[in-house]
Length: 176
Image (cartoon, rainbow, N blue to C red):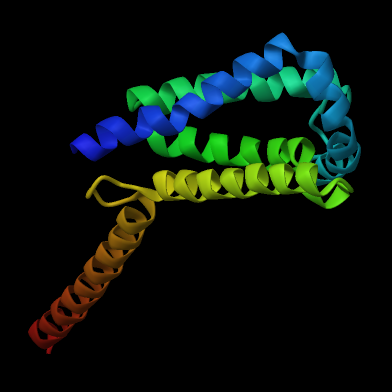
């Protein structure tokens, strides 16, 4: 593991630990902001996963999001399942950003500028998380290994078929 990865993961994760702890300490404030996004996203999630029980209460959703951020950030910072934890953080960052930094709703130019800056910062962090989510540290990823295994199976099947045809010809020649 390079020094860059040793530093980058904890630095990237630190924002989510702080944000998750803050959300748990100020759940009601965050829930008020999250309500608009939750009111739109929860029905879509319920349609996408009809058999799954999805909470509708913004307070519960904020707590779940905060917990997911803290756990995934700890996993990312320590290098445990870094690709999965980066993906979880990326997924949690989207609703957090939409709820927390809706610059398009601001009328005050200063507030709009501050919210836009935070929105763009989160979008930049999202890009870093997406990169971390696909980083294989120089090792082949699961998709590559699956393609390679399928290719190996096809090659082996062709060889078996070729050997079977050859054996059938030899058997036929011995019978005649």
